[in-house]
Image 1 (cartoon, rainbow, N blue to C red):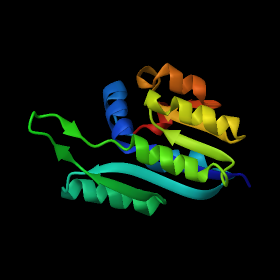
Image 2 (image 1 turned 30 degrees about the vertical axis):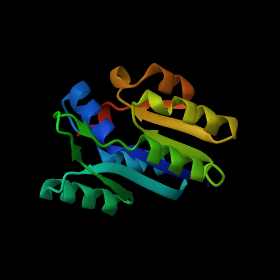
Image 3 (image 1 turned 90 degrees about the vertical axis):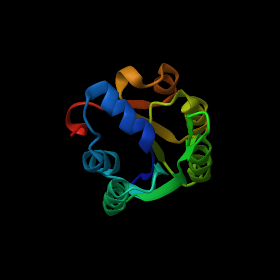
Image 4 (image 1 turned 60 degrees about the vertical axis):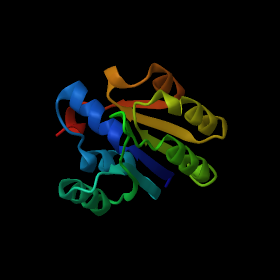
Length: 156
């Protein structure tokens, strides 16, 4: 069976599915689809920790599905802006798995990952991106071997 490593940019998926569809992402359906006929060697969900109970419950659901949840603290700046993205962490983890994965699955619409997926493809690793079509960077769609739109049965 092909070996798959899965990387989910939780904040990006939350906001794009909410903005694009007014609904939530179905992580169970996604897991079933992304892992079918594959051996999961890694599955990470990257999130921001605001410390509230509802978030902890959601993180436990992700763990029960099979994800390792990686958390960063939410940082509110004095000017009102917020900080807390996982781009570098996701990139490092993907690079760490290129030697052992046959397929990289990335759930995100962030165009910052386009060069990462191009590099994975250059190394012979298949790449799949799950994203909300209208809110996924064209450069990311173009860099992936396969783009899977988040719509229909991937929504709750």
